[in-house]
Length: 204
Ligand code: HEM
Image (cartoon, rainbow, N blue to C red; front, side):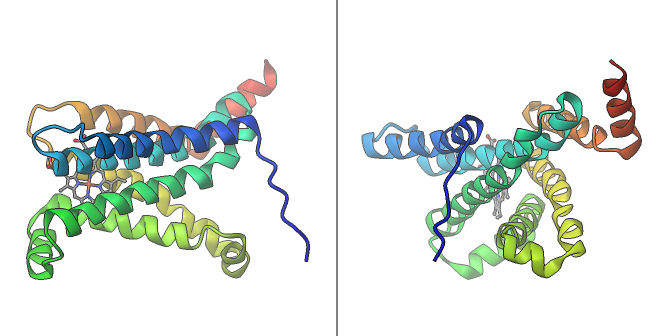
């Protein structure tokens, strides 16, 4: 049997290490008991924020290549998306296991009553579908539909930001910064804008 070669570029190594740093900090804080008065909320917020940041970074890869013709970055889309799913899973696991002690009646009503939770769950399910079908095998099986399915990443990005906007108090600006970044990334994907950028780049 042929052995798979693990040829990682420095950029890929940096992406993997960078994605694991927030987890290392969380584990370190748990091991050393270094957390505030509400550790469950603290870890929920940290894993949620990390999942969102990684999702946006994954969405940023294509526009970065469009702007700077930096193809290497395209290889980061999959790992960054998978790490986003990984942190979203921990985020959800804390919510159902630690916050609600697996009380499924309570979880069901929390998920149905709170609009931010419904949107969060939908985002999580999209990330799950994308993670499961992210392999070469699924790419071959789904053929053209694979690309269509993976366009759901944009929807996941939008829903994750809506989830964040809906759960913060009015007047808190943080989620709006993420919304602005997402809007910029989505704008850079509009075919006419992409074409204009590549034409301008070819001329210079
Ligand atoms: C799977 C279903 C999900 C549930 C039930 C859920 C639930 C929650 C809860 C309870 C909070 C904390 C609210 C608070 O105490 O203020 C939260 C915060 C957050 N969640 Fe989720 N979430 C889900 C999925 C996601 C996903 C998939 C993402 C991103 C990809 C995400 C991103 C965030 C962010 C960014 C925050 C706020 C972090 C901050 O304020 O620093 N969540 N979520």
